[in-house]
Length: 86
Image 1 (cartoon, rainbow, N blue to C red):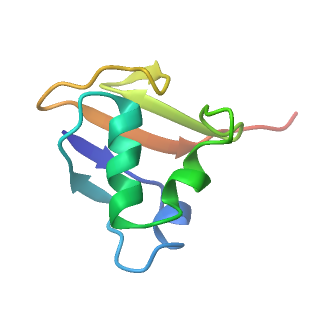
Image 2: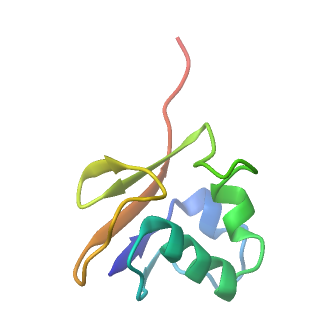
């Protein structure tokens, strides 16, 4: 499956590409895979409850997703900053 990261997040982790291939069965496993490669990345994506941080959103195959979202081979998980304000 493919993971796409926002530039702001990738910049915090030297060597982290904006797109990468991982093997994962859920969004949570994909984030754990990111954490294994770039320690601290999971803390930037998830809070302590654990849930996706308030100002981030995850989409799997174009649909809003949670940490429990299943992933299949060929899935695409997009991590993006949320739009906020008024």
